[in-house]
Amino acid sequence: MADTLPSEFDVIVIGTGLPESIIAAACSRSGRRVLHVDSRSYYGGNWASFSFSGLLSWLKEHQENSDIENDSPVWQDQILENEEAIALSRKDKTIQHVEVFCYASQDLHEDVEEAGALQKNHALVTSANSTEAADSSFLPMEDESLSTMNCEMLTEQTPSSDPENVLEVNGAEVTGEKENHCDDKTCVPSTSAEDMSENVPIAEDTTEQPKKNRITYSQIIKEGRRFNIDLVSKLLYSRGLLIDLLIKSNVSRYAEFKNITRILAFREGRVEQVPCSRADVFNSKQLTMVEKRMLMKFLTFCMEYEKYPDEYKGYEDITFYEYLKTQKLTPNLQYIVLHSIAMTSETASSTIDGLKATRNFLHCLGRYGNTPFLFPLYGQGELPQCFCRMCAVFGGIYCLRHSVQCLVVDKESRKCKAIIDQFGQRIISEHFLVEDSYFSENMCSRVQYRQISRAVLITDRSVLKTDSDQQISILTVPAEEPGTFAVRVIELCSSTMTCMKGTYLVHLTCTSSKTAREDLEPVVQKLFIPYTEMEIENEQVEKPRILWALYFNMRDSSDISRSCYKDLPSNVYVCSGPDCGLGNDNAVKQFMSQELPLLMLRSVVK
Image 1 (cartoon, one colour):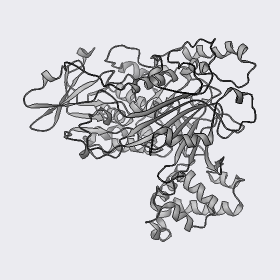
Image 2: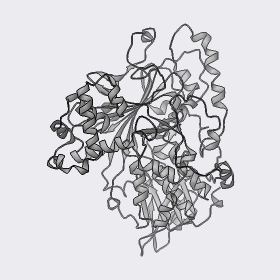
Image 3: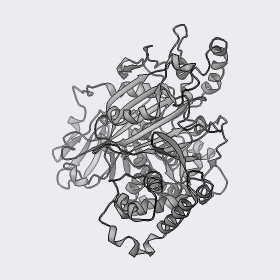
Image 4: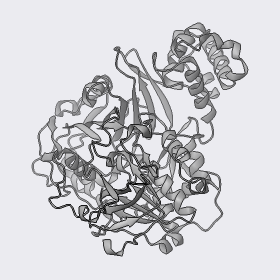
């Protein structure tokens, strides 16, 4: 209960996104008293991952347009004459333009047992308000606002062996279940639902046998706990800032990772695999022998381009695309380097930025696998939870479903001195970290936000079929029209523990120019087709079939100067939500650049 909260902390963190969780872990590990609160009922904010029914519940929450009103604010009576209050928003307005499509059929005689099922209506654009209340068993089991983690218990679960500077990266062949995963995470309770759900398809096989490869919406609902759907789609560079932080802080022991198995390209209406390593280049049948030599020579130069300034000094003012044209590269090689290695577009990057991106790609090759990227098992949402777990082990207190009404500011010093929570309790602290979405519209009136267009698809097969059905792929589809942006596609298989067997989870991401559906649907139509009954029997269908689709826009609050926030106290530090980039460097840079005392921020990496 709220009355059990101490009245004073060293640091109060509002929001459980990745940047906030990293900083909270650093402060807790350095011996500071940390209170970490979130008005949401789950960890991660816009970095979270959900089961399928959990995602439906999240959609319903974000479709409610009216803000929460409090007719008699309890905090107003607690503001003294020499103080003023900065009211915080009680509604998350970072998600817009939500559209849901259900293409998979649902037999009328089948009972959908799990809550959150959409009504049967083939290819229907569905408002999340029409969904039933989703199952909340993926949330913490306590009903109380205060969810203080038992540090003694967590310490006992921590491996006793000395930490190693390696990550646990599973091979591509790993498909087994991780039975005690739920017991080892901060917000997923132990449950046997996954084991029980394995028996559900067996019972249905007798009725579904005549129709081959049929996946119904009822199956998706019943197997919903096998899905871990990320709100933001990212990968980890194997030598990136986050990997280094995970290893040095020993937080990596709380997570497992898989290597991205292939990098794809989309050319002339076809998806093809791009060679990454030296062995891949020389074994590739897509490149001529001359092209192979050209490519290896150019990539060798990119690894140490700073040693040869004469090779690029005259080209700093042009785009990387124009620079590639001046090199001895064929159009085929230019396309591969630009879109699949540097992962940029014709107009987005300068020559220097393109060379840096290419070098970073090459530098990350070979550390954990044949590509530069890793993906966390059970989704991106595991990463904030790992740092929250570390914070709790060192004494941090966690309160989900616990909103903060306002920040209390001293008029004379212009510093924040306390918060007042939903129960009217005043909690004093020296430092405050607030996730951007908690600020009111008035405080953000000078802020110019960008938007991210996101799509999540559940499909029945991979965009590029191979002998193995456990491929994890990344694909960049270039922009075709001026004013639009390249679309990043990440396809996850069931061995990543993010979808049920026989399906793939596909994430599409780009910088917004319109609504998410308007930005991403042209790419979806190039790569996929809607799932229909007639096509189930057609074995000649080459494109993957879409079973279910979600489009939404997410606010990008990265790279915003604190001066843009109106009357921000000097001891209140702002953390942004996810950016549109592929990696997580922006989140780690926020941890490294915040103006908190150095001891707090640096202790986590000692």
